[in-house]
Image (tube, rainbow, N blue to C red; front, side, top):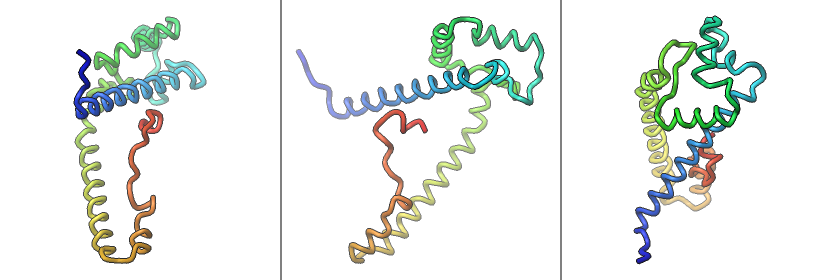
Length: 159
């Protein structure tokens, strides 16, 4: 019994797989950048403003398994992300999930403000060009005015 999935379910599955691939790509890129940046990954994680002690450096080596081979580090990194463990910020001395949570309200407010401005601009443009010649309407549809749809590839969506 080979039944096809309804279109809505297929669309949802397609989007979910795309989202997982984008998240995996972004996480992999972050992991690679940490290891490709010149210098020691521990120094990169600590940053310039954090206190640098031998005990803290050992803790970071142990937590991120930086003594293990790169493949083992990568699998452990993805495993922590999959379980929701984002680690701790050594610069702010707080869990990363708490830092992100504190910023969600401001991010939502900024996103909503941008959406309101975008819709208001679209309504003004639509009202100003209603009933006008096609050339006038076309002049208001440039790429700098209207948001373009998200790219279909995973690499463009995460940037």
